[in-house]
Amino acid sequence: MEQDSQLKLFRNLGNEAWTILKDSQYEDGISFGIYCALGDPSRRSKFLADPGWDLRVTSGAPGFSQGGGETTYHRDWSDDGVEPIVLQREFHGAREDYVEIQQEFRLFHNLAVDRQTGNLIKPYDDGTEEVAVKFDGKQVLVRTRLIKQFMAARQMDLHLYIDSVVYGSRGEAMPEEWVIETDTTRLELHTPKRVPFDRPFSRLLGKKIIPPGPIEASGVWPFEAEEEYPEFIIGEDEHGRPVRYTCDPDQLADYFGKNSEAPHYLTPVHFRKEVLQKYYDRPELYSVSDGSVRCASLWICRIDNDHDDRVIVFLGDLGRDLPASERDYWRGFMITPDAKISETNFRRSFLGQFTDPKSVDLIFKRRYDDVNDAWISLYGWPLFRTPEGPDKHLFSRLRLPLNDSQAEFESSIRVLTQLLVDALNEKQIDSLLSSKEPNEKGISKLGRVFEQEEHLRGIDIKVLRSLQEVRSKVTAHRKGSDYEKVLDKNFGSRRGREAVEALMQDLLDWLSGILEALPDSGRSS
Image (cartoon, rainbow, N blue to C red):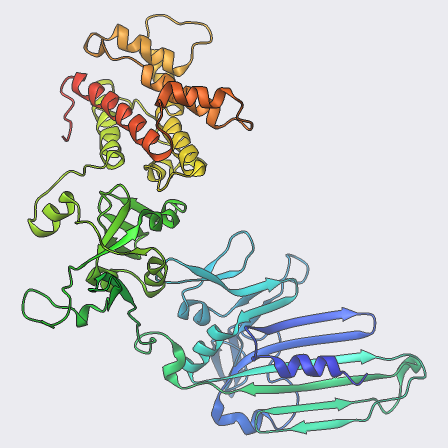
């Protein structure tokens, strides 16, 4: 009944990563509640005059009042100088009750709702996100940093309230009553003068006030934290040691005499190809295309990805186009520059020319779309169906392996097969065939279309069968002795990235053959 644990919990609120804004427990031997509000700092002494709560849990709804012959509309029924953060919605059994967070806090942080959990999510400009508010049973928790930023912007106190009743055993001695008063706290422990039902209890009632930080601590424009620009490797000195320089665009040279002693904005910075893995793995958020990497509509950075083993980005673009967290990520993949930028990037960046890439995967993507567009123009439907559902981002994942690992090899084979074999528009292909064959599969159907359609004769389907054969072995749970035989048959001595590149080139040639054969294809290249 001395309530030490409740007192310790309450005193610690606001000092950890998460702060409880609302909680309640009604069990045998305990009746416990925590609640919160925002308060006007100028009325602090009034709020601390007594330990009672300054508003009800159901406060916050708009309505009318009447007095002196006048009817007045109130936006909420909170006491003057206090406003709720957590709103308790009650439907008196007609619907299930629930709680929500006030709209201004949600809009201030641009919070989104996680439809699965009901939690509120804080998205950031770099594409990352974190849980901002958790609804865990009867408990509502907020990320302390975010509520303190809101308090700083509003310049309002955070009020935290507690009301805890703990019952003891029959005949148990009463604890001593006490009162705690400080500039920001009012807590009282009371016991009854008469014990009902011969069962003693104590009641802990009170509040604490957490003052706001300065308005500069709000963390939003114009009070955002000063941006930091890390250094990247731009070369080697005479002893072979890496030379680093800041990516801050304002400290780099340009063609107009700015910072003439500093490295140029267009200084190439080199990275291992694996830096793109993160973006390929989340195609619902990121996209890697010919010459750029993008995060939804949040940011885009120009890159030179027309290389076999590296990605190159201009030093100034790292500082201008990448968010701070992404710069830190890219630093983990830095390599010493020991090659030139690609001819493709040189022509685009310095000569202002429209130039096709040379990397087979980048060309493949264009040719794939060209074939589908030309097929639609001729037949009215696409040769390859657009992936849907879980596979809707499949095309974005198409690439050469970033390294020679087995996982990268198998992923590339699966994606190629799904786009070229599984996506064959069999239903429409059937409509072109003059006869039907029992149990005939998509590749065979396409082969008969090539034989039947005069302009497509001479195009074979061997490369698709080869792809399908490799996929059947790659996806097997157990790879027996015949696995290597299949690889030898289709790739010779090539393995990993080299094998996929050769296969993709064969498939590219196959697509190009179809494009050349289609009359009036309107191909782009």
